[in-house]
Length: 110
Image 1 (cartoon, rainbow, N blue to C red):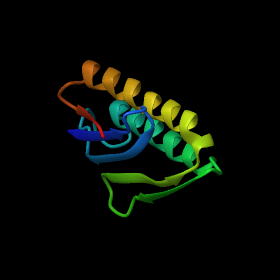
Image 2 (cartoon, rainbow, N blue to C red):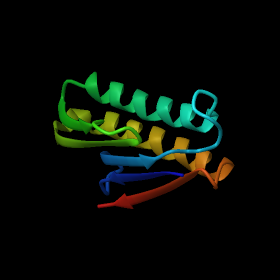
Image 3 (cartoon, rainbow, N blue to C red):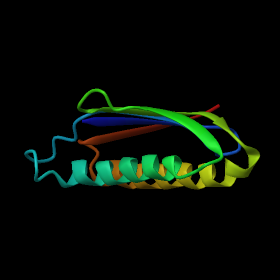
């Protein structure tokens, strides 16, 4: 099972994401749940990389583990961080509802 923890500020802006585990829906190379998770998280990281008004760190050092955290952001990046947070939230709410044996999603508001 993949477990995903999304942390957002009270304003809804993304602060961090931690994802670990394996979906185990199907064998490697045929796992549609893993593919969906990878697209959502990979796209989110690329969106952060393409946002000049912020600094973030990502840890992808271990297979089956991803963590990224926004370290610093300008006020002008808040709306983008809200959108990225919404994208992750809605995607993983949907995935965890469709595949409850393979995806667990949790969100914390700080």
